[in-house]
Image 1 (cartoon, rainbow, N blue to C red):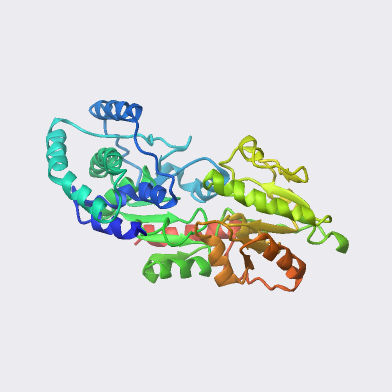
Image 2 (image 1 turned 180 degrees about the horizontal axis):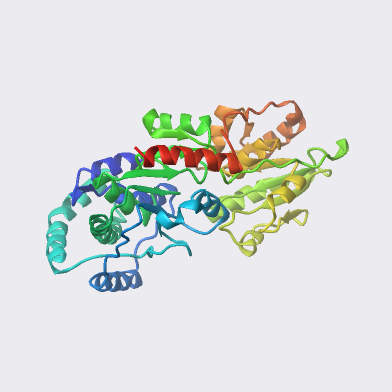
Length: 424
């Protein structure tokens, strides 16, 4: 049975906790279910849950009388920091929350008191059967209790943010992702309080599920391609602002001798199930039959070189340093091969040919979108890969819709659109 997680989310949103639909509170968990990576709760997790509930009685609501901007920062990697730097001159007005060293409000805030507890328990007793019924009707059986425990933690977060917005004069919420476990209660509660909410695209969009349904009032996207994606996914045009990406930079590739062109082939792997990563590497390694190719693997920032190295059984395949600078990578890479990596967009911007290797039983997401919207070649096996590599210099990849602006220019555009909303 094919499960429509977007539909489940919408159905569950008809069940309300303090006027907030509960489906989108579980946005990340549904994404994990969609990807097949959701982890059921174990005994230790339930013990942690009890600790969370007990601690929630002692949380105090902070107040910031002179701050009007709440910023959600989901981490400290380069893309998080580059987006955040756009607002560096506004630091005196900004409260930072999330999983970042910049956060002054922890990502693990939960709130409850005796009065809330009674309301809470009554709500659970009234709504668990409805919750279970929606999941059962849609074919989700094995994770019902685990999902409900996830929901309870999300509701504890809602309690905190509901009190926080009552006690602070927040005018706008902005952040780099609105559908995480930590961020979705913030965005949904801010919407309830009629606070303007904005999310800035931090990575590639992978239809049909992940970046939508959009929880923020507005999304700032990289270019016309991403605007088309959001429109196709049902987001109204007036909620989409095309600003470009401050994460991306244009790098001049060092000119190489003609005999070297298309000889350094790089496979970019992304954080999917290990068996799929292994399959990608095994198929890619078959290119070693073409003696003039030099083969490299570029791992995702969240992956470990040691783990990926276990799948490399061919001594002609080398793993690039995890911390390789992008300008150095551009100099090495003649052709990028990937299933679904945001690195493909950056390579296209910098005139590096890209091929999508769609050899897995999961959707290629952004890879498939690059094929349909930008004419990026897509193949299903190694034989197809070899054929395309032979004619790749004749393929014209369209890049004009990928990024409206980049780097410092994108930061200026984001700031301009932000202030339009902030001053409204």
